[in-house]
Length: 357
Image (cartoon, rainbow, N blue to C red; front, side, top):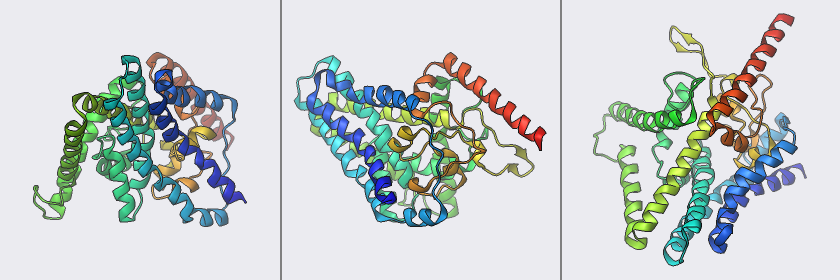
């Protein structure tokens, strides 16, 4: 019964693609419904609902982690995102849309590129089965961000919470400066990782071993197909939507590791621990993003599937859920005011605990 209830709650993940499809069908003022849902209704619900720190016991966790229905649910996002791409392009091309509708639909689909494309692509990119990794690349391709598949797993997870990681924000760094640093830095890092991999395998630059080259070819082919069948307007709107998805992802990166740093050691940096990622146990955001907000455990053990990610008492907790923190991050002075005060209170509590020992 408990497993059925858990599976049922994750059906909420299907709400985002269904709302996007609804926006594309209804148009008019409904074009903005996805924005109101993700950044209006969800943050309000998370203010009302208390964080849930419940963890599965070891016996239940063993039943959950390999249960095929949890996998099936996340696999469903792949055809849904592909359909959203198709329906978006068809709607942009065949409907007589006003500028108001065009902005709303592009933004709504862009949110889908971040929440469905990159976020679910991120989860599947950590899996070992070949078809799950293919699903990951397909989803990342829908946001024109395939190099994330390389850099995130072999760069970000290795260098997280250190100056070497372009996706870890330093304390006092504002979101807009971070966007430039992480987008450019992660792309360069992906190429550097690929070059090392080619050298290790003694493979040629122009070969099937060069995933970066293959990813560029696939993404260029996708843009060519969009332009050929749907025209310049669709190409521009699709590219803008992909950019929205990318910036949404990088905003999540910003809030996940803001101001957290590992200790420098003689050999590099200290081991990655739960205290090196911000956690959020606010239930709606957790479910909507396939538990990525339990980020401390994700970095501690990256192979753990979304349904068995854990809360850690020693991981820093965000004052609000992910959707609300994303909005706050867009206003730097407000972000600094809330987060720096929050960080000071955490440091004070940690100091008091040490003194009590």
